Image (cartoon, rainbow, N blue to C red):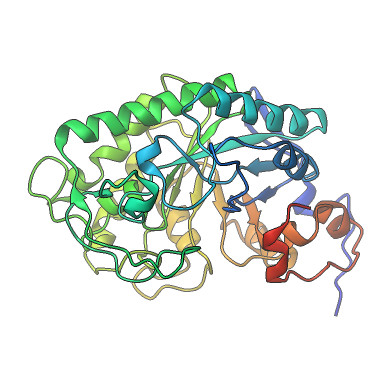
Length: 351
């Protein structure tokens, strides 16, 4: 049964003010989705500018995960934000989005152990500890993940500086802010989970030490750009095995984020379902500890997103694959029009 809601009263289309300089026209967010559509120098293309520009009706676009250093790569043709040509490529994207009335932030990441020497000029990936990720490397001819090497203290400081430089580059490229990808089993998230962090120095062994890198990165990037946000996966489900002790890390980390003047915290889940160990969904758990703006993500559609907003679980709703299939998703939802179904073939083209 289709539920018809007065467009003027629909919470999905209520504007939201994230700061004095960042106002969103609705509460629908384009989720970050890796498409591997950059060129061979990891520079965003004109086709990517058109792709994002067509989705500027959303209140906010979170661009696909963007690497901060060549040694942070883990997938083919993922864009970077560490060279001038990449900055110039992203500037075309942000200009197109802004011309079409939208807002866009860069999601910046380092893949850590979720990589392979084939992407790293033969070097081993780094991780908090030398703990191997099992399985096949996506989008390759059956390459298998191998053993990473433990990142050194000096290299951790280098990574913090690389995040800061990427944030400065995002500012130059015209982004409205940055989101730190500290979810889904990538490098920052690897520090936050016991399966991947066996360290006994100042970067491991306790909730305070395991979350230290995230807070140092936040402090560093805030020197470079006004709007800073974080994506988190308190439950290990992608590229990481969950450990019951992980909850203690996030019980400590999330309340501390209240003092960081973030623009938002974003749920990093493929499906945001009830988690027994958290007593609710990941978004509800984040909301219980973090008092700022929350973006719910993980299998939401317009109706379930609307209900999450009305219940107060979140302030914004991230939509993923339906926005791939429907560039005019916002208009269709607003007018109660049927949506085109997503199918995997769409992943091979930018429409």
